[in-house]
Length: 294
Image 1: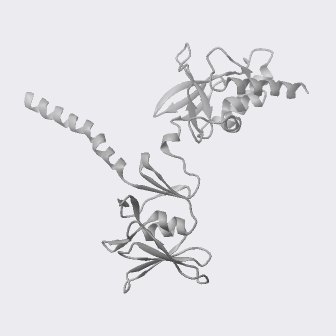
Image 2 (image 1 turned 45 degrees about the vertical axis):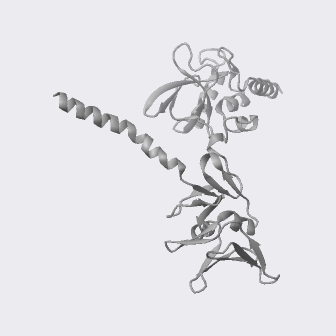
Image 3 (image 1 turned 120 degrees about the vertical axis):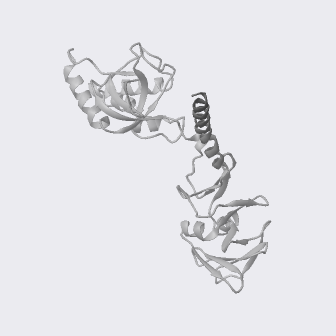
């Protein structure tokens, strides 16, 4: 029995070690091109401080054509405006030619390589030869080609949730990782249905249900995590913000709490601390009331 217990304990230990083994792949070089990560079938590597990439795969992702001259060991990349660049394998220069101007020779501080029948070129020279922005995210080992890249360090960690049911607008049922929770939107309060604001209550609930029910949303915390009943206090985003510090413009466009204030369907609620968007919410509430009176 003791022997079986030892074996079982050893198996558990190995299972808990597995995630750390997988995480070693975080050091792999990743390539991001014009809005998305691409995944070549051979891995890039760094040579003499330059990132070498399988040129056919990356060039085609950029919309370029690549030809290989077996006899002369030359890889040619055809870009736009009749430009082409020739890389001689094993040489520390490349030529740029637009079929009109004289051919130019450009020195490199590394060489193009042929490895296992794959041509590897320094991607910075390829991109810059065609006037394409190229950068390197050293923290996440990522070659960045083109515009619009956002480092994972700047991507927010908002909690994903599925809205199951809008109970009354002040209590929203969601499912997070398979578990059910109630979310109270921070900073806002929909008037009670039995009050003189019954009409407003009904409008607010209809609006909230149309906007949220059945949708994937992104929950953002503030200084207070839960209310006195144990419900989650959150800002509810209908689209994930670009960074951990969303702008007011993003909130007015994609945050439920701000949207329902703008629609004049909720009052301000300062029962729990609303530090992140207090000024914005106050402005939206005042402006909505002014518009309603007019």
